[in-house]
Image (tube, rainbow over all chains, first blue to last red; front, side, top):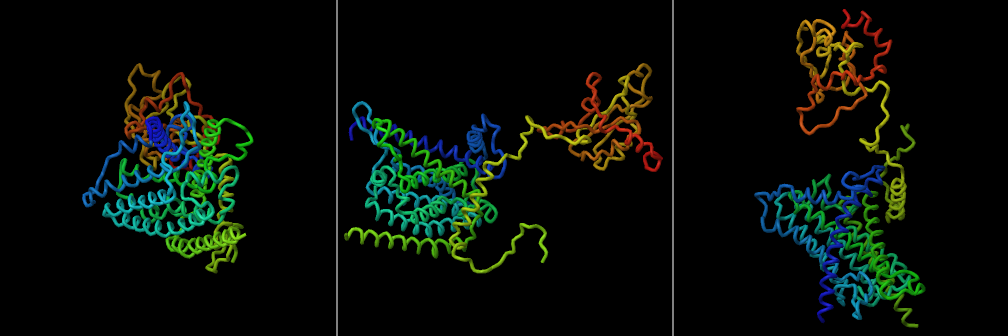
Length: 343
Length: 189
């Protein structure tokens, strides 16, 4: 890797990190606005124009709060918990292809930090480690509600990761590659995977909700039963990290869904317009973010529509509903490709 | 069984049908409801900029009236304090000195007159009890404060300014006057 590429990658890495943080920050604002609008309210509108400074005010509040570590808590693990949650949430963005290629001064740069040939597996690994953040935090708190929340989080993640993996296997059968870059490249134009894998998309979407701990699957942190679940004992910015990690996860999940099923940075009819390569790339990236924001809106829309599942319903749905469906999806895809390949 | 509204649904434990079991039709139905609310007119009134229209006889912050010549009407009889169910009113009477006739209407006046706005329930009983037509509730809103102390309103806030008379004609009607003269009520005996 030569020096210019290295510099570009570093700058791009920082940009992606900043964008992730800013999007996550404004997701909190968006969440409150969407919730308010759906409940016929106005939402935050006092801090700045349209309340746009509200996330900043919230952040300042979080920093200013008193930091409490309970005496009975395990000090080290108590600090490690939110750190893991935050780190893994931020790490996932590395493999996502944010755009095509940019040509600057004769050099061609890819708008993807690392094109791993096992990109999907990397995403899975990071998401799975993310559970440890919640589990360790809940365990270290030495509080029954936190522990219950952590246990719920762990079992929910295990149950839904299986179904998610199965929907991905079916997807990989159609694409023939684990690299996110290749998967996006194959969906050029309007060949989006959602048209080839509608059932797989539904399974993946449901599991994505469960993996990000969002309603209707927010059992690890349900306020009514567990007074906050795994972050009951947390305060100040450590609590902020947990809440923030959830929003980053939502952003990354939306990006992954857009990449896998909605063609990533591909735009329909882009070839017919005849723009230069750089314009196409920038337009594509803008379109990709449009897709991501639509997904985030869907996340919020569902959260403020559906009530929380009961725990046994959640487990029933995971093991008796989604996993058999996932297996059926793999079989159907496999049989289809078996017979089409024979011809 | 007779239902109270046409929206009530009888709950049952029957096994879910396939369409119910896959949840999706129900989810889409719910989402269509929330998205309709998303674009609906908001019910919130953004208070300091917009104000809700009050009833003509709204009971808000009190005013201690002056008469036409600008003399305070209150004689510190204490009937309002007695009538107050929340015990929000305290006062201290004083005797009018010679030369103060232009300030106070009768020989006795309230040297201190305080209403604790945190205790007040804005029932209007003080107004009913007052034999001198001195205290009235107005359509002004008691402002919010950061501390408890400023909620105890003294005469500096309660007595109306000479050049800024408060209109209480909506509450001081002929019917109210007749009510006050009625001997059947305790305060006139």
